[in-house]
Image (cartoon, rainbow, N blue to C red; front, side, top):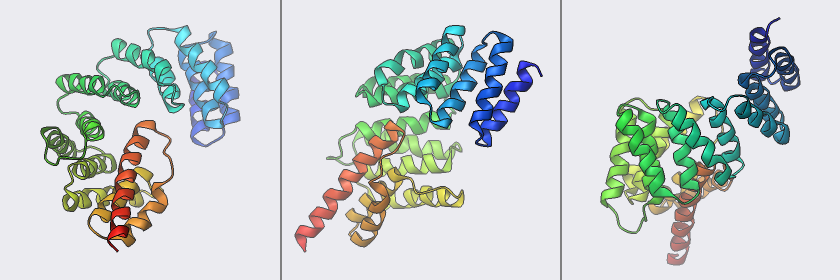
Amino acid sequence: PNRFVLCRMAFELIRAGRCEEAIARFTEAIELSGGEPEDWNGRGLAREQKGDLVGAEQDFRRAVEAESSYAFAHATLGRFLYDLRRFEEALPHFRKAMRIDDLNPLYGEWLARNLACMGRDEEAREVVRQQLATHPSNADSWRMQAELIACAEADTTPATTATRLAIFSAELARTLGGDEVRTNGALGFALLRDRAFDAALEPTLAAIHARRRRGLPAWPSLEAQLAAICARLGDIDEALLALRHARVAMEDPFLDRQRQLALAEAEKAIAAAAEIK
């Protein structure tokens, strides 16, 4: 078979969880093609899924070296480094992917997340603002703006201009048909940070129920959010129940930052309730 057939077979094997066989097919494709960036990238994904992180990184870097103008290769290497919390190393690859293909809003989201995890919140928000100027109807960009603002905004003063913008952005993302879990979660988080606890409950529960309908496990950031809301509303039993899942760190560093903020709010509220008793 030619390399295109081999790659198609390999991706089907990855989806089936048969990573060793996928690696073998990609290796055949690399030998046939001399090393096209898509083949290196595909084998890197198979190795990553298998747990061979050293081999995966080598292949992702070979993809970039094979064609430095291949945006997806830079984005994939950036995402791999981001997942490993190697944010400084990931940054130039996300920037390069954006320079090559600035029409892909996903690259902007990854760049913004990476900057936020480096503590460069204003730069992250500027990336998203630029994305919205180019893609004003993109629900993910509005949702990302809501998440960035809510994470950065101090929660001591309710109804600030910033938190209102976060709420507006999340509501617009929901209206534009964004992912039910992420947009409802972002709206609930923005309302939580605005200390509008009653209003935060509905979208947070909607996000949790959407994951359950999909047969997905509990998401720690949403559970931490629910724990914080319930604790602030005085339902300590429900808050403690949600905390069982909220203490598990998330693989995505940006989402784990949200989890930690919500978890701190929940623990503070539970401690305050215990003192009253």
